[in-house]
Length: 281
Image 1 (cartoon, rainbow, N blue to C red):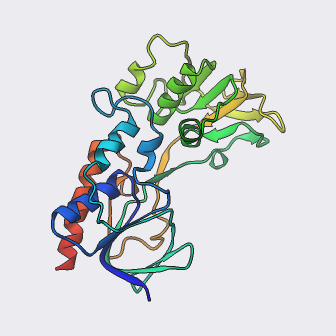
Image 2: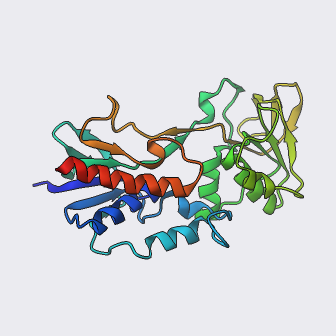
């Protein structure tokens, strides 16, 4: 027999955690959270760069966020929701089912992969999305090979440029616009570092197989590299709701819209909890 709750939260990042804490504080005891990773915190746990408050990186911020998380709150960790049925049942990867009255979807966002871009050439080893590389370095101790090229100067591109430079890799940052596009605080962090910035350009061709050897830019120049990161954008992760948002669901965090700062993610998680309680009335 399936477990049943008034509110089910899918996603244990900032928005999901904030929603759970707000529900608990409001007296809701029929709520649960499902998170595919073995612990709560989401991508905060892979962010070692500063910018989350005085002296805080993402991991420290996540620890503070979870410090007062109610230990009694039911959490299904290491579990993935594979389907949401019309009868308001969430199906987990192992076949378990969880019934609910209201769903808070807090599944975050996913990166646009390099394969979605119109780039010719092979797909050799050494091509990653920036978020993949961030997790590999900070959570698994992976050390990439240099030189490196990063396509895209949004926040994740700037963060990874900073981190690869700190690993003593030679880094070329390529941006289609005529200037860097990420937050000023992420641009300022790169000041004084030996970053090569190429504006008004994109990657036209990938060279090398089975290992990456270089890229050709849209202006015709060839840049040798062993690592290529794409940081070309994020897309809200809503595939569990392919037909739109039903009346029994609330979106929160980056699956609602892409937020530049964690504070607005938490705020939207708390607001989602309030909306969910209203739907229960």
